[in-house]
Amino acid sequence: MRKMWLIIVREFMERVRKKSFIVATFVTPLLMVVLMVAPSLVMFYGSSDQKQIAVVDRSGMVSDKLVSTSEVMFVDQSTMTKAEACRVFNAESGVLGVLYIGSEIEHRDSVQLITNESSSIMIEESITHQIKSVVEREKLRAYDIENLDEILASVATNIELATYENNGTGEEATMESTSSGISYALGIILGMMLYMLLILYGQMVLTSVVEEKSSRVIDVMVTSSSPFQIMMGKILGIALVAVAQIAIWATLVISASKFLLPVIFSADMAATNDMMMQMIVGTLGDTGYIASLFGCLLLFVVGGFLLYAALFAAAGSAVDSVQEGQQYNTIIMMPIILSIIVMMSIFNDPNSPIAFWASMVPFTSPIVMIARIPFGIPWWEVVVSLVVLYASVVVVVWLASRIFRIGIFMHGKRPSWRELLQWIRTK
Image (cartoon, rainbow, N blue to C red; front, side, top):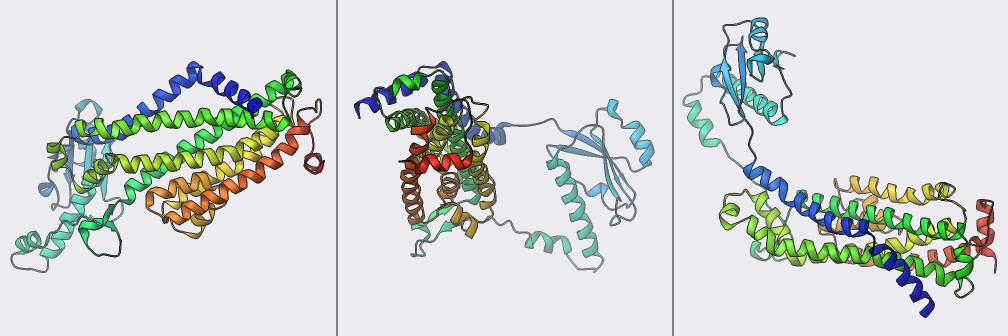
């Protein structure tokens, strides 16, 4: 253990002393905080100049009923033809464009927005919604319903869906509120973080083994340490770098959650928010919940890294250069890439069969499971996934060590898959 510990310390200190580690460690959480806060600040304080749109209405029923907003102001120019309006309200006029409404409003291409610059989805949806409402109202008027405007105003209803997790009591005060949108965002962030950590630090293991093998440093190390001690020392040393980085991130994010968010989102600002914004602030401000997410992230990072790092170490020992290791590297990374594909699909249904089984298979479970956890899945699934993952780590590390003990002494020829299998079987 003393010899392995020396290797662990060497691998750890060699990487944490680099400027790239320091920069990545402290810049990444800063970017995370910015990503957490920026959308909300933009929503509250962001504003754009009001755009003007010239309206040419041939139907005679829409132009005078369009309501200008803070984003767009409608100017009725129905006395012009479409061609005249396009010539007058061109790019030099300063208006966004021309909204042309044909006489047969329901026909295809009867409603056209001819812009001088790029419009936005918000503006286009607002125009579409207003025209649709006007047409529907005019159709209702054809039925000659008395007091139609008052009736429509009285039945207009705004519904906000509040979601809660059922705890069996039926009491709202004791149930925990949930949001699939917030769960989706947290799942994406955690899944991508784990993906980057596995790729980044796994490649470090492969590169380290290849470099020391090609420079014959490992030949010297073997004289005082066993191949297994060397391999595990490298894996655990680099794993500690990942753990240290996550610990720093967790500390910074939890501190921001506890002290920064309450300052940015004051009581007055929170009071003016809609339900979704209040849930976002409440979730990000729940330090216990954020800490539990980082705890799960740490467990899956360690398990996933040990699993893949052993494979990267075995691949590095079997080749003489990083370029030669690309063949094995691509194969090792395939389950990681598959995990990302599955992760993107589970947001439609986090409890689907493919999501469940992908979170139990050890090669895909770290990324898929960490993306499912924010959706409030049963904790027994998380425990089973971790047990299977760490049990698989023992098996994979043993197999990788069988390859590593022979591969570090082989030079000049990349082994075939059959030779790798023979190395595993060799006593």
